[in-house]
Image (cartoon, rainbow, N blue to C red):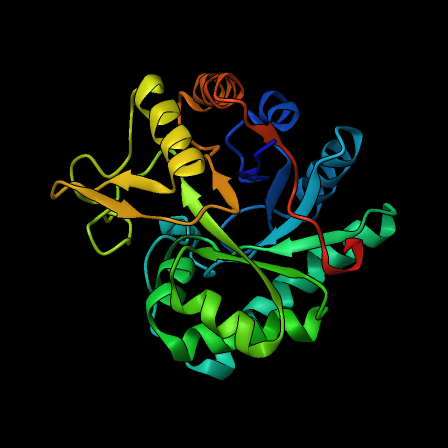
Length: 252
């Protein structure tokens, strides 16, 4: 059976975490920079543990006014410090609850910058390696972040997006542009099935773009997030797809 990891960005204050957690297999938890604090981290880790959902860190730029979605000018050293501080914060919370940390997925502007800029990608990969070389690094399919993770010796997971529009080059349509975020549940489900079962998405310019999907993201901060997650799971299940978190290196 084909399986896929369903991941969601949680602990960001959207209010739908409790409904989304049972529907996913990996949770990317905000670590106190773009969103979240020690209390929200603890609550999210506890909830993930109850539902046997893999726990991951979701570090972003320290820019709450813009929810970490702006790309900020940073050096490589600053990036290492930024990511390492946040991953270690969630590591400490998870350890106190007896829950292992499985992966790291950068957020927003940091994610997009690391996808294109190898210098920043290398810094993110170094921070993850410093935190724990057994952590899995999630990154945009075909991106510099995945290449940097592999070069650092990390296990990587190629991420695709059920609810975001793609350009012909395989990058996401920037959020500020019309149509960047899919707003129809049936369209989200159809794109998710296409990504997992056929390895492709429809580009906004026309034609299909090949996308590898080890893990499929559904954002948790939209008004329709729960409905989208339910429709996506139903569509994938109907296509014969099962759900399973990306396994750490130690699991074989």
